Image (cartoon, rainbow, N blue to C red; front, side, top):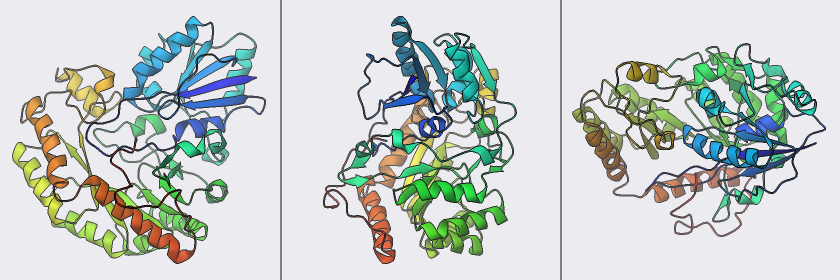
Length: 421
């Protein structure tokens, strides 16, 4: 049977470097479909959606809150044409009640082990309104390699340079951070994939550059070491979220091809300064992730933090505004306190202030957000800094013989001012 899978577009952030990465959720989901299902995939961020399809069943996979309203539009159009529509994905779980109004079926939780039953229900004309599998996630040993074959690969290049593929080695998170919904989505426990399954999937990925999307790699020291040992033979070059601040682990990460990390910079302490230096000492670049607008931050705190970032030699910085996404403690607290004034999900892009901060006006926090971007990239643009990181990975690839020439000559000017993310 024919199944149409869609990843809705969303509005990109003004003034920042944009690029499109191959989406992760849809390719992981596609691997769970029964063998008799013929899947046709459209990533609306890089392709035009054609509503004229002979697919019997429509699936809409949504990751971001800023995708949900577009997803509802798509679902409405297909249902008006007589198609059955099912929602799934991270933001479906965060906005489940609203999604129920726009679809024939809503799937919550992880898909492994459940899709055979869903499609059998569809074939019998007994599709359920809700499949709730948020409780009792599947054993990670049944997570197979993602179906990257559904992607149109040539759409994920910029100026001849192939963007990273996304890959995960674990699910869940034992940390329960204030603004984060991961513990709700994937469980409060750390759920690693077996190392043979990690190796099996790495062996299927042709792209030499990866983004390891696990919420944090620093959840279990021995697991993290063994993960990097497993990765070493594949000679991938990869970025990830936090790596444990331990010399042995950092050394193994570097051997495994760590290119750069996303590291939260939350204060101006010597610990943060030294931590950034330790990454650099191991040849690992750092993109600082800086969250503005936490209740403990004053305007002076933010200004001092911006000055500090310029001192500690970050390779890149990404600034976001605290955003109270549903199913987070931030959302629950602010909703109870009446501090959320904007409920338009299209504005939940982490660059717009949608709540009342404790120590300044929303307008002032918005100004400081823009000031942070402008200040950090005043002397050297984001594109120039990205170019330096790209050249670093090319040098590493040339050293170990894994470099594949870009489709066009890579120069600082050709790397581009707009790469859609």
